[in-house]
Image 1 (tube, helix red, strand yellow):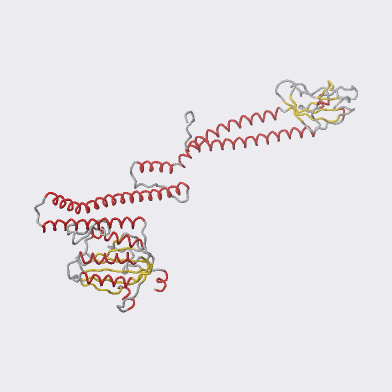
Image 2 (image 1 turned 180 degrees about the vertical axis):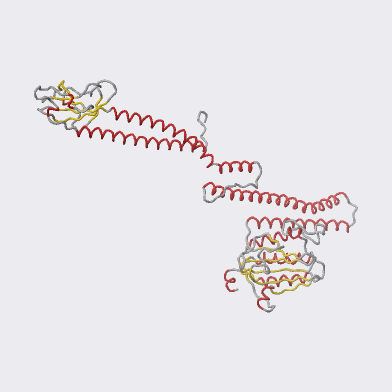
Length: 506
């Protein structure tokens, strides 16, 4: 809203607050000191009034001359006034007349001295007197008075001194407070400059003050943690967007080839009526073949989308040994040019001292887990020359360098590792083929990535098989990993967590 003053900065608020508090503290101290000093001075005057005992009675009045006082009988500052038995003020008094006296009433009834000494104003001027009522001789009432010049002078000087001290204190606190606050807020100033640099694009900068013993240091630690997470989120977002763009481009590229073939043969069928029956059959065969390829690709894309959104897996006990045996038997019948064997896991063999196969049960979807193993065997058959040996191993062990489930140099996986030493079930598919380069191994689980981009469509798929297998493995709480041996084959490994009962039994 217009017309409202902008809020003060934190530095100004702190300096103003410290100055106000210091001013209030000094005022309170000065007020207490002033009251204590004035009370002490008044007590001294009251004590002098109470101790005034002139004797004999002739000090008040001369008996030879009734109602005639003797002034020289009193100390210099005292004055004594008299009221008769009727309460009327007498003109006679004791004391010198070098200064105005107290302003006393003509009647004793109007004199406020019943409870002890009291202060009254002077007849003229700004002075004050302290008066005390006492009984006098011959039925008279005496009023003893002392001037308060000393008290008023002392308190006046104290007031001036307190005012000067207050001004000096306020100015000093304001000047020194600004400097102290400036030095105290230097970490916040550095934070502000660092934040401006980060806003300008230097995202790798971090706040320098992170001392956990101070509030600003703890704030810096929290902000640095927040910046790290934001940078990580931005990096993940950029990576996700890059993968999405590449996914869309790869999907378009994969769909373009069969669509182009179908379009070309379709246009050829419309333009030419002089083809032989064999040529028409060949064209129709290519159209059907490319339509099937495109249909398979669309099915794979739909499956990936389903696995990414809300995968629906059956929860049943799956015997991995039987699953692997069925997959090995099917592969041996379909592709007899590769020797496929089934053996126990190496760690299990070393522990047991024999090569016997053991039943390994996990909880999951039998159909999806079989799809992973069949995909791994299909890749081994497709990307290795005829006669290459393929070994399938099944067993249980602890997550580590030999059994899998842990990150070791050269091992590649899209999922995080298992805690070290946790019990896992493993299916390995190892071949003696040419293996993968480091570049191909790092990207082999990406969608639409193919290690041999020049291979024919009959020998290689669309590059979605391992991506689908990875999604299924992660959906079961496991992971798919690769141990490449450059030039000496490759080992793909499916690692799944063992159920609690099987874990304890193992």
